[in-house]
Image (cartoon, rainbow, N blue to C red):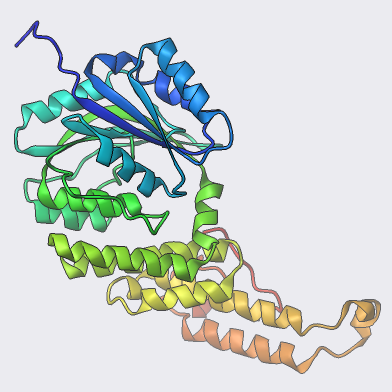
Length: 375
């Protein structure tokens, strides 16, 4: 009813580790919504800077109800779980310590939930900011009344990922649900999938979040122990079957994760690791036969051939006389195999522009160095 007091019933959970430089902006962005916030839990996960002190100063300056909880868990998912255990609000809002909420977002998301009694999740739009690139708006479109279909679409990337800081979840919708604590990638996907399996969704088209995307940090997560990372994510995805998620959607997601890791490995010229990761993609009947998979496999093959040739080339102290020396036999073998690969994958079925490949009608004599293009 118009004029009724607004209930302060939202618990905000912010996992933070060495976030002294950004926590002020994150907390300050919540100030316009302080009327609907019951509590803010900053889960300080083993910081060795002034994260806790900066958070307290900021909360005092903006009049925010803050509690700092000190833990040593080393995983954002585990830190969020601490917040879930301590939350007293009737709805939960997760925010990362280096992002900012758009003014009034919590009030809009709360009103959207209140207007749909069966909805357990309100999702707003988000703005992704990447250094050197234009901002990208991600609107929450594509959700339907069928929960099973929402889960399928979410796992298959047919709707935008739900960014931390763009969604408000009702306490009943997250009861007994927790973030995976063994992985540092896709743990949010596992959590939101479980929520989508049990609750309806209401969307808000207005941007709720300004999300700072660090491409290099994300790439490091993919290329550090890639096999172990993939297996851990796959295991957590398998666990979603317990909440009714269909096996087909889970298999697609696992193959896509493997392909995503392979992409970063190729970019960093880790062709052997990328080849191993693509084996998990090739067994999937859909993704394994996709144009993108064929493209990655070609880049891996040619990259490894090039590396083999480089290792077998004349040693550096003979370089001044290289023009007068016969090339090692292996170079001819590498060129022959590379040419056979091009011919086998050439013709009308191969799109022009594939790195290292050309249609059969336009094939050129292969050189000893294979070109690489950016993905």
